[in-house]
Length: 94
Image 1 (cartoon, one colour):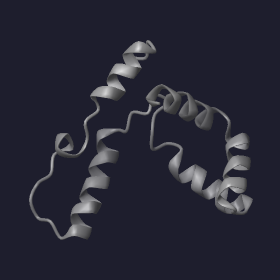
Image 2 (tube, one colour):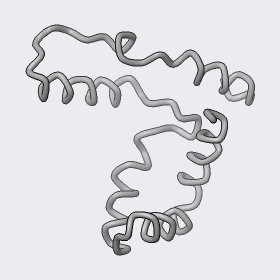
Image 3 (spheres, one colour):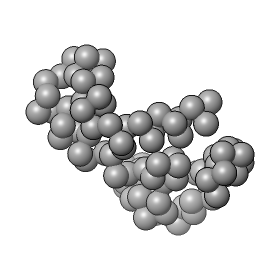
């Protein structure tokens, strides 16, 4: 499943038009909203599904704020990337 996700993410990042068409149909949204959504999200993940630490940190900080949590939360406490790293190795990515 992770390997399929990597292949899907590669398609998304390399095929904007096809992705926009799929988004408009699946999400029942117009082209303008699909394009804005695509452009805002496409750079979040790398082609290999890696989420940059600073992107993950932003998500954690936002969740902490919403939960009114003051203690530090490390990336390791919320994300186990071992299966992703194994799939990437098997695909010759890392």
